[in-house]
Length: 111
Image 1 (cartoon, rainbow, N blue to C red):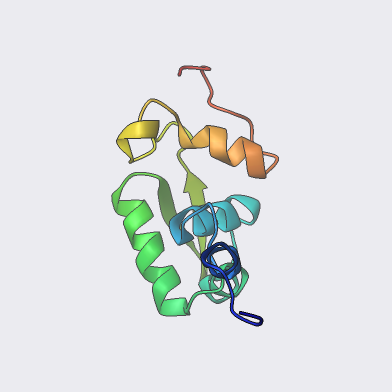
Image 2 (tube, one colour):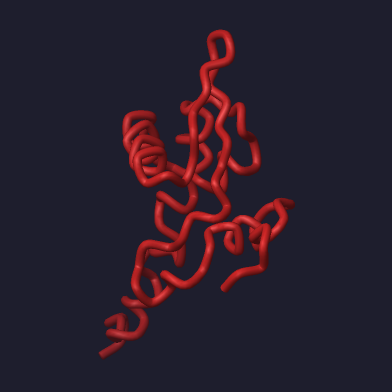
């Protein structure tokens, strides 16, 4: 049957990534702690409202802290925060930050 895509071909063309939008927002902020949410949203490929909700989730989870500096926000990340999924709960997000940014890995090397 010429022209019919196989199941494997359909699977390979689906649009997916290894990291969640939460991870992408965290990494964007790690790269630029004074970035506007509009810019973070554009980099990640989500709406500004979605970026705001993700930042609120990350802040509530203790992964970042938001400080108002004039008319902008400045973000401080907590590299000691642990991954939320049980399979990776023994790892710090500092390991992810170190992998994708110039940030150092976890401060105490604890695994």
